[in-house]
Length: 330
Image 1 (cartoon, rainbow, N blue to C red):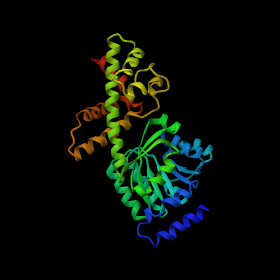
Image 2 (cartoon, rainbow, N blue to C red; image 1 turned 60 degrees about the vertical axis):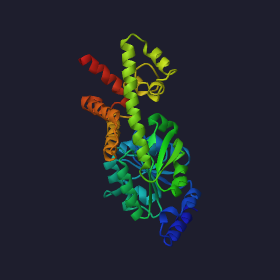
Image 3 (tube, helix red, strand yellow; image 1 turned 180 degrees about the horizontal axis):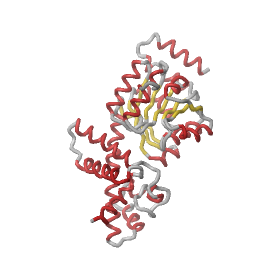
Image 4 (cartoon, rainbow, N blue to C red; image 1 turned 120 degrees about the vertical axis):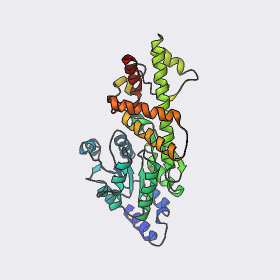
């Protein structure tokens, strides 16, 4: 049945100039057909698992073959490169570290666009430069496919529990089709506007997140230096006006909360290097739009210093540890 539906999509597509937007209902009808997934890192792996849990056959690949083993054991079909994924699936999700990775996965020698089917829906959940998302959308359109940016918020915990927030940019006519898949991996799927607006929302969110985490770390460190018990201080903050996500959900002080990176030597979670990258994106867009972001600029400098001091692979909440070490060096 799915093959018939796909065939009808291509037949109608040849008669319509805007192939991209003509088949939203068809995609919904073919709901349990194969879904491609490229990028099985800390975020992509649990996201792909949730697609499998919801009954979607997954075809996946990753530049590191060992990242595919766990998914393969759950029934996913593993292939060698993104082009092979595109050859077998007409709905593909990508979750990659940076803009160069996205460009390579879509337009490289073994990229998705080498074998993409007309009418395919391509959803990129990486956090990248909005301009790159627009470029990928234009390249996909030339091949008769639809590209949407859908970066996420929530971290590894939310990816595992299926409670991510997706910020989606692209043709509004395609949002329903994208939401069908994204709802399997997230609790909130928000349409932001045309291609690139999802990335814009994510960049703004992460700049605020970095600023908030630094502020929480400074506050907790000061309170500890003043003799306050860190758990008590966190409790007070979280019932007061200083409450924020970094204090009540992802506290950076070891021993204050369970199940967060600070309680595991800052392993797992969202890496400092990735936060520095996202803050760099925020700085670039702020420069391009002549937007003053003094605290965002300072946060970027701090996370870049952390990368240079050995914190690159630790969770971004390790800024608390960084500040403590800076304090000891003085």
